[in-house]
Length: 488
Length: 90
Image (cartoon, rainbow over all chains, first blue to last red; front, top):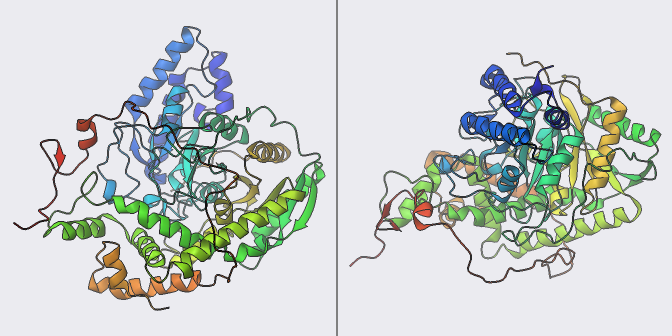
């Protein structure tokens, strides 16, 4: 078995019993990149030299007998909207095509402190706006299970790299589903953590009241290992919570006996494909057989979530993206006549169409005369959605829903229809709106051979419950399958 | 709801070319149609989530980035400052 196929947990054990070195792991991942990256196209930037140096440093420290983090020497790739000191960070946008951050995001500092190895920076939808990775201004990423299909988005480079063995783990970011939906489309595990549990310092902001960074991997244990490193308070992010976190790998074997799983009817409605509903129901049955109690519940405001989400997210994006003006960093138009013209040309040439649409929508809903009708109503609705979840969690430990209404769609299928594209997020956005944790767990395949995912949703800071439920299901089905063969 | 694309674009400091205007208008109209189905909700106040209170940090002097590090990404720099087109006529 090649090292790139192994989980972080296995590699960590192998490093400790000296059956492989960190250098061999990095070499194996880069040989996999050499073999399939030109077909999958997950990476915007490869950092081979610094990665090999990091691996060599881990081998030297281990040889000296130093005790390192369990993730030391494990290849963890990073989405390109997370700042990496002296390494290009583009957000897949022409606007930041040349941006080299002078500092590391807090999560990047944590990865470095844990001695992980970073193979490179991953493709995404421009400024994390999209559900297919087709909005990257550089190139499209392909689904490793079938290259004609999208890998999901916006963390599509992250999901494709992990699913194809070009990284053992990856960081994604999730504002409306951008970790969970691509994880579902590529058949991997992806955690959108509780709002406030992972610092966003150094994450290029999209919608600050919704954005979260989270881990993606091929097993639940791997995702728990990476989450252990990421979570925690950071004084650089005023929204990060003050609390102690447990070791999330400690109770993965506990099983689901005594847990009550809520099944909200609204998530199994018309817009969701039959094969997805069937697969998720079958997975819930397995968990019931393993000792969980299953309960039908209702979350009536679900139908309004897409509206509330696009108003809130776009409003915040229109403010956050005002900083891209051609003055401090990034792209500046070549020809212009005066300051205002320079701003307008820079922004019009630098941003792609989807980003422009969302800035325009956000500007409109915040503009004089419309604020009460749109933004204020959406914020009130956000509170109601959060309350409905809180009521559901009075009688349930977690909820299970589909992650996406269908399996991955074909590249090009939805590009000219924003509304169809937005519908890919209907099952995931509520979780961001309520600030809850959500976990994608693969649960079978559709008729087209592409993966289906289920979403585990819990109360704030219930990641341990979600992860142990996911681990229980993973054990029942005997793992989530091998890395697919990449065929042209 | 009709949306005045040119006005909104101006507020957002974006320029939508004439040949793109119709497509943009159509798509924005569709998106607005989607987001308009919000119910009337009573209540007027919304603010910070009480279960997750923010705590402001102390206002202390700490090491920060050097000026040259900050400026190395700016498109145009002169004498340690970013350069923009002239904004005030003499």
